Image (cartoon, rainbow, N blue to C red; front, side, top):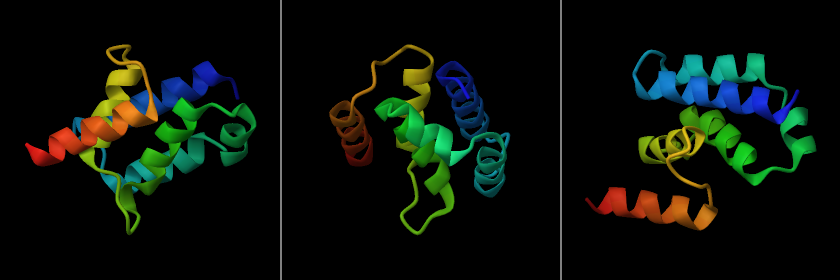
Length: 97
């Protein structure tokens, strides 16, 4: 699967989740149906990997926060340029407010 296709799926799932059009559990199920983890690991793309795991861990014991999902959506939409450091700072600021 091409990077563009994966980004389109990640963006769609993230947006639908944040709009409350899809439950966490359903989002994770659809992620697993649409994207093969092998495609993620073969790309070696930090942005795509982070987006994939943010969705994958929505229902995990260590749940992804909605703030992280907002950050990823902003990156997909071109409002931000992805970096781990920026993502972490964004989440910290949101948690403090």
